Length: 448
Image (tube, rainbow, N blue to C red):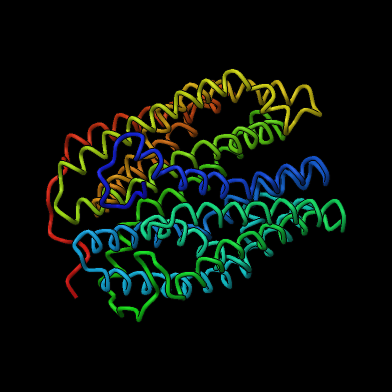
């Protein structure tokens, strides 16, 4: 049976509905992991370090795509729930045009500013040159990355989540195949890894663009846009929390790297990079559940079905918690093979990586729950609470922990920083659920 935004979801039905989004987000996370794997094993340790130094900066460049994708998606889902399909299509087109213009400006600015940013990160010599090479190639294609993220959210609302999954798989496979070809066959090294990533992003951006430009049987199609500053502002405010997350996480990563260089040297940075690679897959799975369920919540909210909103909310929390415990068990059992995949060539580094991974593992179920906190309020068009949760969790609590715990506990304080700030975020989210219960508000999508 085909599931739609208006379906009466059982727990199994909701799992089926969000599964394509989970697969999509996981394959998206593989871009940086595949590059890191090929570069670490076949190019060199210095180049591997360079990728991990520059990637937080590149991640920030793509944040605008997540903001427009989640924030605009919330408005569009509410419009669809209210039965205003043409309005939804025009809003969809408006956000895409604004995102494209913003992505091009960001590409140009980042290309020019990268040398200064890389020096600020502390890179010198070969590391500086490698960061600049890899960074400028990816920065030049920022608009593709942002559009790819944008469509990943809207394909779910258009009820084409399965198609979205296949597009993302195609993009990931393209990246992986070209990584092998450019690095192993052509010998392009770090530049080959960068161009393979750009090619994957192009696949993920262009295919859905063509689909929505042409007549299709989905809920959405690109139409004449609404030139409304109010609509853009509302969408940006809705997606502010996701923008905050995608800006603050890289900043916090830089802080982690700085502390690790001070307390554990280059091996500490490498060990943490492996933990974050593994963590990113799990986080993207949780984001996929949240991204798949958010339009369902927004649709019910727009239709005034508050009991349906609460029901979906409870089921999403159950799914996330169950997945969190399953992945926690997986990490406990397979922590050594996971670490060995990336750093098996160095015994000391392998043991450090295993230890860091084991410290991180118990917090995975809480991390899963926390991922829904801001996404839920974004779906309700409550950008203030969503941003409050996101900013506190990914920046305020994180900075507090990473700046204080290493001074007290040394390297061990770095490893436990993320578990501690995720627990603080968990308590904040529980409080927000009680402080801002689900209630009907005036439509955030406007009537124009």
